[in-house]
Image (cartoon, rainbow, N blue to C red; front, side, top):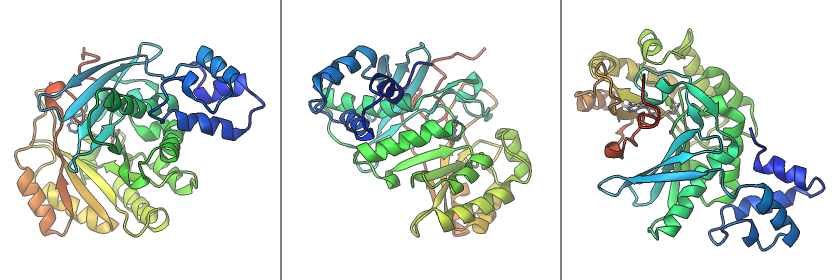
Length: 346
Ligand code: SAH
C-alpha cells in the first residue's frame, strides 16, 4: 500500500502544524484548484515537493458510461494497483445530483442477490480513494459544464462500509469539513454488522450521518440464508441497538432506514410484510425503503411482482415506506450490479 496523502505529507514535512494539512484538504475540494501547483496559500517549495511525491487524485483512470436517459453516469475507476471500482452519479428527485461511492474493492459479505459479493473481497479502499470518488464527480460536472450541485452522498457502492470502519470514518469527517454537504445528506448503508454498529455507539468521533441497514427479511432463518453474516439472535440484538442509537446518537427527527430488496417468491409475501411491520414496531423510528431487485444474471433470482401489495401491508400497519427508483439499469449501475461488468463470474 502506498502512503496516504496525509502520511506522505507528514513524512515530507514532519514539522508542519496540523492546520497546514487542513488547508490542503480544503484545496482538494476547491473547484479553482487543479493540482498542487495551484494551491496559492502554500509555499512554492511545498507545492513542488507535493507535486513530485503525491498524486493529485488516487483515481488513476476512469471510463464514464451514461444511461440513455442521461439521469445516471457510472465511472469505472482504476486505482494505482490496477484494481477497479465503480462510482455512480445520479439525478435525484430534487433535480440535484447524488453520488454513490464504493468503500471496498469487492465485498466479503456474500449476500445471495448482490453481484459485488460474488467477486469476494480484494481489498479495502483507502480514505483517499473513497474521498476522491466524490472529487471525481465534482471535476466531472465542472468540466462537462453540467448544471446542478451534488447534494447527497450514499455509501451504497461496492463493499461493506463498516468492514472498513476507520477509512470510512475519516472520509466522512473530511467530506463534512470540506464540502457543503451536511450529515443529513450523507447515508452509510450497511449489511448491519452488530460489533461495528456497537462501536458507533461508543465512538464520539463517528459523524452524525444517516444509517441505512440492509435488512431484507424479518424472519431470522430466511435472513441468514440470503444475508449470511446474520448472527444468532440477530433481530433482537438489532432492535436493541436501534433503540439505543435513536436515544443516544440521533436527534429527535432522526430515523433509521431498513433497506429491503424484494425477491420474487423469497421474501415478498404478505407474511414477510407482516413480519417486517411487526419488527419495525419493536424498534421505533424506522422507515422502510423497498428496493426492486436488479438483475445480476442469476436465473434463480427474480424481481418481485408483489411490490405494491407488500408496500400496502406495511402502510396499513403504520410503517413509513418508500420504493426506490432503480437508476442506470442499462449501464449496470443500479444497486447490487456493481462489479458485474468488471469481474465476470466463473
Ligand atoms: N454493503 C452495504 C452496501 C451495499 S449496496 C449494504 O449491505 O448495505 C446498497 C444496497 O443495495 C443494499 O441494501 C444491498 O442489499 C442492495 N442490493 C444488493 N444487491 C442488489 C440487487 N441485485 N438489486 C437491488 N438491490 C441490491
